[in-house]
Amino acid sequence: MSMGLFERAAESEGRILQVEQLIESGVEPMPDRGIGYLLTFDIGRILVLPDRARESLKFRQISNLEEVAEIQMVSLGEEDPWWKVMGQLLTRAWPGGQGEGAVSSDGEPEEIRLQFRSDTENPKMIFLRYVSNRVHVGEAVGS
Image (tube, rainbow, N blue to C red; front, side):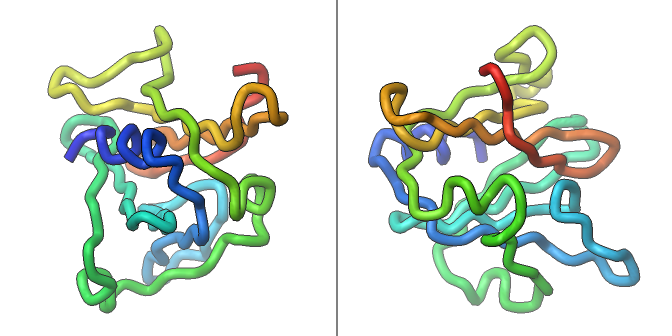
């Protein structure tokens, strides 16, 4: 699925409630890069994964937690950059990366930027980026 999931969450002003990182067996987790992230908003859940074939991100709506029940995850609510936006409204989502707005040939972004809080309320920008078969996460500064 496309980044339209995030766009709809922003249009609905979804509030971020929880972020979890998928755990890879035998690999020490690093909060800022991993094999995937599950973002839980008050209006739904979005799974972010790397798409190795397209070297981009892919997104999947999770309707029922049973869909991911077999996956080990760790909460990142107290990790950078997520603790800065927990409980905040998602107000904007757009593709980012090289050439700002870059997408793969199949229309999936190599990076997505999420803005929490409005422009007038000290907004925080978070990026999720495809890098070397992983999803990298951080605070987008000066965006």
